[in-house]
View 1: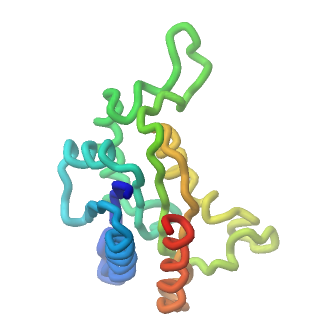
View 2: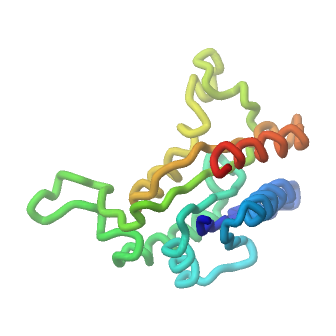
View 3: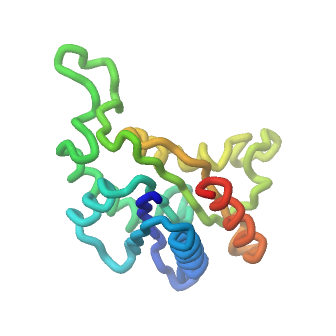
Length: 195
C-alpha cells in the first residue's frame, strides 16, 4: 500500500470548466483507493494551505500532478501553488538549498532535494494533437515530446530529488476530443504504473 497525493491543478475558465481534469483526478483516486492505496486529493482551485500542502508532500510516496497545459505550461494558479508551497519547503522539508556548498559553488546545482524516495507522475490534458509531438517534420514542436514540453515541471520535482513515473497525456481535448479513448488509456496507464 502506498500513500498517494493527487494535485488537481486545473484553473476553471469560461471555455474550460475543468471537467476532464476533475474526471481524471477522481478516476485515479477511486482506482488507487480500490487497489488499497491511501489517497489524498488537493484541488488547487478550491484553495490550499501552504503548511498542509508541504505536509501532504512529505507524507506521500507518490505525487500525481493532474493539470491542463495552458500556454505551454501549468495554469497560473498551479504555478502560484508551486511558488508558495515549493519555496516554503526549501527550508529543508523539500530541499536543503540548491545542492551547492560554499566550498564548491559551481557544482551539484539542483541536487539538494530531501524528498528522496518519493515518486511523481504527470497527467496532462492539452489541445495539441498527439501527432504534433515526436515528429521532426511537425514544425511547431519540431520533434519534441510531451515530456520536453513539461520539462520545467519535471525539473521542479527533480530539484526535490523525486523520481519520475511515466507521463500520461490526453490530447486534442478541445478541437477533436475522444474522451472515451482517453479514459480507457488512462485506466491502462494506471494499471501499468501502479498495478
